[in-house]
Length: 131
Image 1 (cartoon, helix red, strand yellow):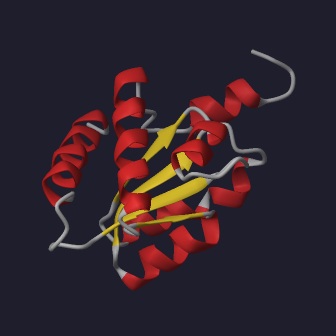
Image 2: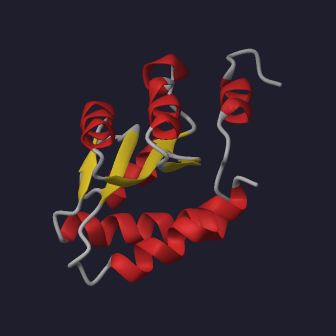
């Protein structure tokens, strides 16, 4: 364990995606951003959850302090929305098409979207991870 608490924060981040699932989530997030079907930032994710349009909440496990995003999993569970932690906020930012770190993102609902089957498939994989 490191003394700066980052190992602690990452162990508190559950469910944490493995490398292949992380890549899959980031690829889909990038596509959803392109289709205007995603939001970035903790405030936007909170709004999407409150509005009931968030399909998957994505949270950076390396967020510090973790308290600034600790409400997202609670809200997601309250709304029966799945969420997943990814190891890197820089990678999430890149997938969102920005050069800065992004601590949270949401993939939002749009049944008419051609991404709907991919979103459903990813949700199943994340649900299996959480068991």
